[in-house]
Length: 388
Ligand SMILES: Nc1ncnc2c1ncn2[C@@H]1O[C@H](COP(=O)(O)OP(=O)(O)O)[C@@H](O)[C@H]1O
Ligand SMILES: [Mg+2]
Image (tube, rainbow, N blue to C red; front, side, top):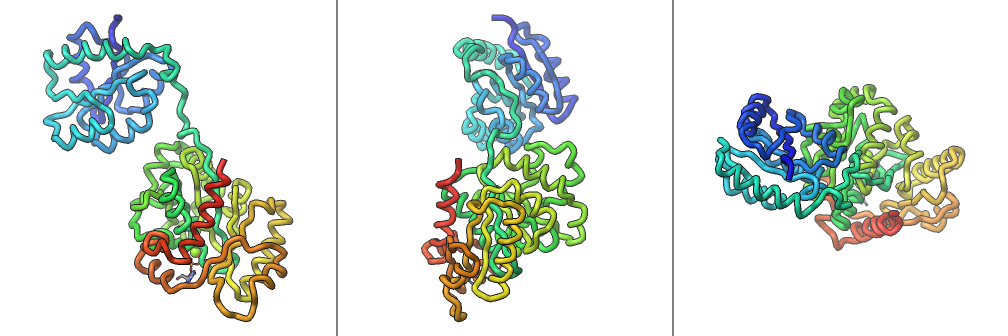
């Protein structure tokens, strides 16, 4: 076998230089690239060269996990990863094995370890020749997904849009275990972070300075993960920052999110803002939530007319009646007649809703058997069943 190609990467250039200098003594290896940016690996993968990746000691186990999950399709076929660590802990080794990285070499490197490793590496690549179809590198832009996009929109504040959006996103995540992101489009007064009791490090406003270079990996790092697994892109904390988020930026973020998610849920403000209008075109479903009071129903009717003028497809609209059991002298049938549409989902009123909102625990997690949760489950099922 010819020399084994090696790519050396670490956060620190002098560490890379030290490793490279040591490897120079071994005739079995050929250093084809060194870089402080792991993404430079892409240039090697494009050429379909079987390569050993030496990940230096300054990457954390979280960095390594991200790296492995991004390149997992090529692991053991096109790439072999060796972790270089100084006095690795048992915990570190256990995590490495879980990530299917069986090679951890202790620093400082020594000749014996490296010779042993060389023989193993030659065998691995021999067993998995590069013409194996699985090893063909395809440029990864995102995860090649195409998320179903759902907006929860109410025509009047206080109707329950944010409550439904948060619960729907959490319910979808627990039912499917897929990639789901919840986006708070209430750029002035977003409630989502509060409703899920998360304290995000970043919100959408922090992405804006990077928007021109934004890629899926960077965007992922700005999302906050709720304990249910749902990823959240919260609204700005300062309402005045709303102005710095243009429609173009919003669309760019939505397009990238689409590539890395199975579902995106938007919690929309109660107006047809520019951002809402721009996203409308990209939706698979628009969930219009209303209550039984006359102003809400009047606004719903007007909104449906606006959507018709915008040629928004009728079949993408789902009507959600919130607090459907409140006795206010109007029946659901009368409402259906007024708006000229069927009500798709009815969610009753229940004090567990404000209770769970105040606690920051979604009702679908806290009271999964309640009628409120069961009706949200119905909506979740519609989405799951119609996802392509
Ligand atoms: N089904 C329900 N039963 C009881 N209270 C509800 C219900 N749905 C919403 N609420 C209450 O209404 C308030 C407004 O809900 P929210 O989701 O913030 O509305 P919006 O986002 O449409 O402005 C919340 O504080 C919540 O407690
Ligand atoms: Mg809201």
